[in-house]
Image 1 (cartoon, rainbow, N blue to C red):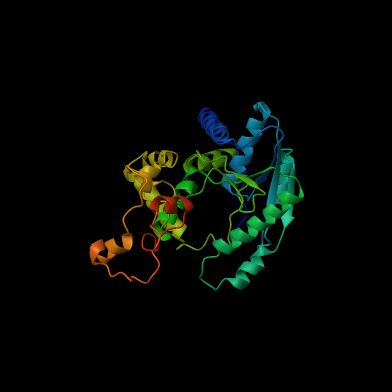
Image 2 (image 1 turned 90 degrees about the vertical axis):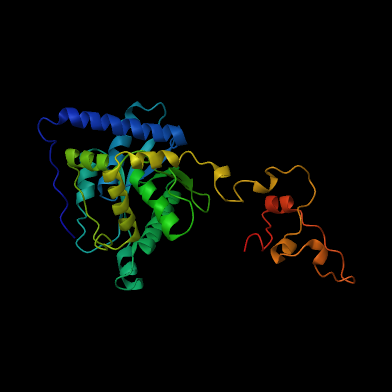
Length: 320
């Protein structure tokens, strides 16, 4: 693993620019916290610190907001040491002790598991992230944390949206706040409104001791990297486009999409509660009078399409 980047003071003459950037980040993080109710009185927040620029920036801004926040909350930085070869174990403790930040280092050899299970050349991120998430969730439950803060930024949210759109045929993304599948944990992403370039500039100016990830960072053909390059090209060709898309994620119009479970299209424009025509006859392309009828068969119940949509019990013809 490469040595961490050395800490350095901001470049001379740039103090004014750094101050402006710091204020912008603080405002954006504060806005995200307020918009999504991320932090409340008495919260114990586990700040997941990886050693990358994003998590360093998140911790720094949250510490600033903690001082003047209208509510009292606790911040504890938690790092998962995954036992990667040559990992500089001293870097994070030294940094956190230097700024008097409460912290805990978890140790779990997920590196060996991932290298053993995932075939050479295959993407490691999925398994690695699941194991990392499991370890962090377990520690949060054992130690009474009410919120888990992750360092995903605006560009991460956009990339996830397009990954799901292009590769998984669904419109979904990475929400600024979510509850874990088991309902036990609330995950927050305070950097949801912050663009990556601002984080990079802030981290460089502050001289954070960055620890690169060598487990998956060398896998250049990851789908996420492909999408990231696409977004960077869009922004280069049309500055401001990513901000526009980011705002669109917060302005969803269900009636303008095609998700029948999200919007009741069946009720739209109906003028009576009578059952809709038999769709099997429609799909067969024959008038109802020409459809063969078995006189001895029991009469079929009329299809109430509206009731079906509300019960999410769709006819297979409609929802194959």
